[in-house]
Length: 156
Image (cartoon, rainbow, N blue to C red):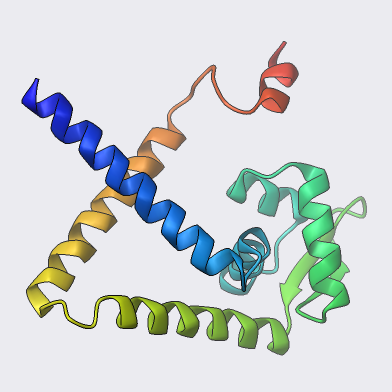
């Protein structure tokens, strides 16, 4: 029973962390757009379907974000020499600058929030958060019948 209460409390604290982070970040940054741009900057050039698969987005959401990023000059598209039905997306220098600025803003915010933490507390938090992220990634990688309704409809 005590272990169940500890896990429930952990879940509550994690949800509060996510909520606080999302509220404070999403006012300034479109999180999905930042994820798309970050992926393209790190791994590009990429096809739109590769972006959608990596970020678990629908094709229409991916197209919408890519169009906005292209209009803003953050990505450029080029023909895919191996598949004329699609194109490749690469980041521009402005896009890479936006990724860098977003990362620096995150570092500044985290540094401010944890300013009174000891180096040991920071190391412990980093280890535990990395472990939590790894567990989420493994859980999400496992095949499941659950998931978004649009995926369930495709399986039928």
